[in-house]
Image (tube, rainbow, N blue to C red; front, side, top):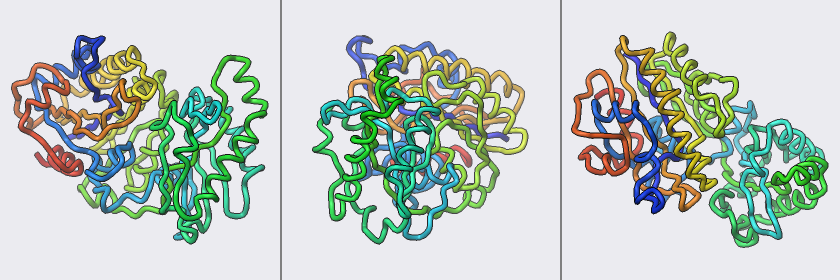
Length: 397
């Protein structure tokens, strides 16, 4: 028996006027998801507990069966693990976005989805200019990087109020800088980066090419070293995780899942969808569980790019779900498809409503559903108020 979870990040949405009050899930051509819906069950799950900020770290911990109230210590350390950054007891890891600001307005949370190569040069430059015996910068994937602050817990920096950059696009950054005792330490780093990066050679070239410059860092997602039991100890099976982003791979490493790297996995619209599907099929030869995370739909939501959100859903349906179904049609398996949270086109950020999920496979009785959508799932009586309960139902139904 094989178990597959597929997470189209941020895929859930609101009805959109230009789509005649339908959602991207409803209008996208997704014959494979609709087939699964017609032959499986739909439901809804609250992946973000009340009181938590809706974010991918919280939501994906829930989907993997780990209660955020018990296990969550911050986003930064989860990503740091995948980069091989060791954290001592009093160390703090921060997510360090390369962003574009214009006259103190946050224009772009991703600096035009800057390339890995350009980002690495900038991060190395910042390490030279801003790094100290306590502060170090580490290049991640594109705009997603890490800052390590050794001994940061002694300064209480994990207790500050931080704001995610994708939540404040178009707003004046001075209103969203970190708040609380010793916040000046972090604010000065961010302000200093703005001075340093404004004239950086890479940014001059990006401006000439009419691309958004990486002219500031944004520090957020601060946290300390997490402690979690392994997935095998918790659920009794070996598993693997496939994703382009350090966050998901870091969670995987912490809980003992095999992290599989896929060439061409970018964390953006152009990611290697088919490569992820093939990597999952290969992994299932050795493990019984695989978690496939796809970031593209979330990025489309943040960019308010309706056309690409629909296109990415169709790519996921055909190249990931359809391909896996074809290869496993003679095998015993069960598949769960669920977003981690909504990223509505109209909001351009995450929201905390329950998301629609779909379960199909051996032991799952056929419901009475016509397609996979938010509205169809809302008609189901199957509902989990705690995200961590869904995987238990999925694995042991």
